[in-house]
Length: 199
Length: 98
Length: 268
Image 1 (spheres, each protein chain N blue to C red):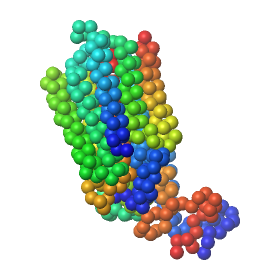
Image 2 (image 1 turned 60 degrees about the horizontal axis):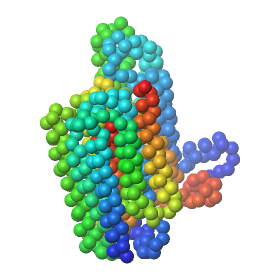
Image 3 (image 1 turned 30 degrees about the horizontal axis):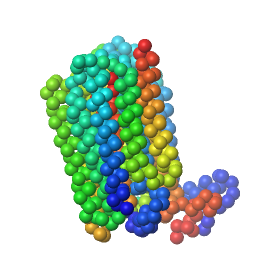
Image 4 (image 1 turned 90 degrees about the horizontal axis):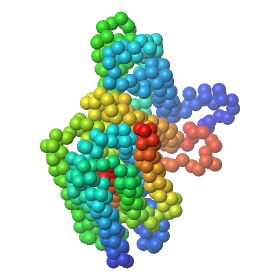
């Protein structure tokens, strides 16, 4: 799936404490562009919020902070796991790396399940995508983030596939997958602060 | 080498989780007996804490610490850019709303 | 046989008759011209973009049509004439996928999808708008209906473009011939996602998710324009690098060596 010739030289560089770009620089283009895009969505939300403070405050009261906290901790755990995975794979400890990769996916699934549960709760309270402006933003931001998480599962699939067999194990590709996953994490960190805590 | 890295990552996770828990306190302090009240202090704090977390994730989890200087500067610049957009939207929006 | 030096006309004439990449360059230029025309026609002549609001009442919509009467008829008249320009454009993109190491299924799927997508994505709006503008004394309710039909068709049918983007980006990411840089594949993912974001336009008549909303239109436009500019530049690079082989596409030599234009000799 990737150019193995470039990878063997990168592996040698990584064993020394030299400077390296984690993963493909291409993925960093995506990370930065996507962050800017989300920042655009967040800015629209904040401006909308200020123009309609009471409506937003009232609707926000229907959110349960515990879900937000649980979700943030779950994704932080998943980021921790994939960071460990990258380290382990760099040291050649592939069994540990695979275990960490599966942990990452596991915490991601925990996030997914909790998110669906939370949506179910909100809908039962009568809050849907079309209820009011706040919930438009809530469901939009959480849905598009969840879509990124689902793509993250495919990306983690690529990482697991790489780590599985000695014939592959491209460190660069594993790092690229990790970079994507961390993006899903830090986007949620911002979404959580903006939807649940900002007043 | 792995042991040191593992310890560092564990500490990073602890710090990030502690900052997350700080939100619980922030959230409680913002409310008046269960009634939510608008507050610039809470909003700005929430955004700033989130961006500090993002920078920590960049530096430690995403290994920008070991990256060439251009990537370090770029990611720092990005955090500043996001801060400017978010805080800017909030304050300019407030000024316009009157 | 190498390219001649000499006056611009003689060089152009030589390229037109002998350059092996002439069809590719023709398609590329058609694409550039098409997008320029599209921009001018939709934004300045017909002025249907930026889009009007779905929240308007009927008298406002009728007024909007009256203000644009001549622009709509003239502008879309030209759109009907030039819509065929889409063909070489889509063909060039499908060609890029044929040059990749991936299955031809990708190129063919893309071609079919994008050929069909021009109908709801451009032509239906053109037809509905010209019908609306043609008889200004028509029943206002009918004019409002045509207004909704046009804009919903234009904005709401992004699904086809999204699938097309996905086909292209998957091809780019698994391609071993390095036809496009991987970052462009990832940018395609951003583009495809923004096309999902337009879907709520079917539900909302006002707010940020309406067909003219800050999120469903304005932010989307920024991403789309960025993506389009990138692929126009990258397709140009692809044509310059093209060696008509089946292996990895060679990189361009550094600028100093590139003073000579493509020569037929290099192809053999």
